[in-house]
Image (cartoon, rainbow, N blue to C red; front, side, top):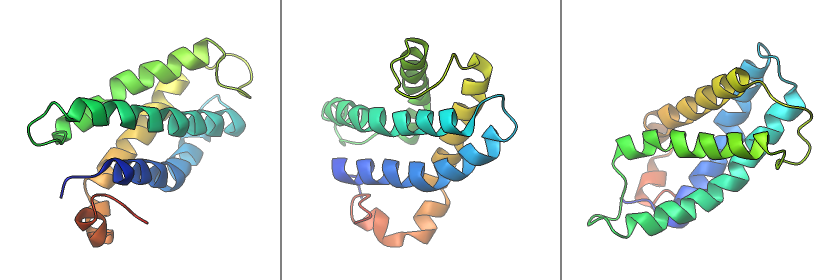
Length: 139
């Protein structure tokens, strides 16, 4: 089943609230970043991610099957990560104190992103069988 726009948004927010929260806690414990800043970055990823889903939905309308290949889903890490970094660098994410280390951000973002991508392409399909049949919707 091809995920619907609502399904992709629900899945993104669910993964950020579960897998993202756990991985952020684990990674932040060893990075020179406060937990407050790390979770504000995660929140920014969630908010900006809804906007990305709208853009991706528009772009998918030009594909014959109206869906992304799995590789496209993986490489979206690049524009999304760059946008979040530019927002952080421009002090446009409210509440984040001081400049974040670029490598700390990179480690956190890539770890959380890859964890979510691996979860949605593996365990999510087994644990939430109806998720696939309802266009990615969880509710």
